[in-house]
Image (cartoon, rainbow, N blue to C red; front, side, top):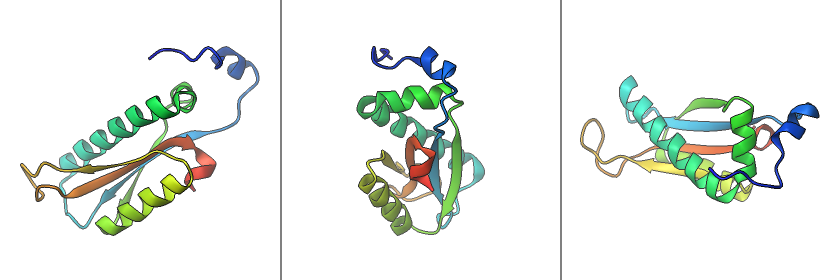
Length: 126
């Protein structure tokens, strides 16, 4: 990752920077995925959201990385819930990536399994 010349991490540390950042990953429980499958899908979601955010909002990624890379994993009851969350995130100007499974193991091909949102300011993800 190339560092943004307008973003001074040391200056942020010196000023006791107080904005918190996190990523929220929402996994569908209605698919009844086993724990390992959920972990793999969450991993895919984190990576997809990270790459998208790195491209569009590199300063946000730098802040998130500097302050611990907080992640929260939640549950959704349906694909529609994931789509609604993705739409709301986009309306707020926040990255939101959904993952569709290849269908080789536990779920049907094309099943939307998770939505990874952020990283973004904590206040945008409440």
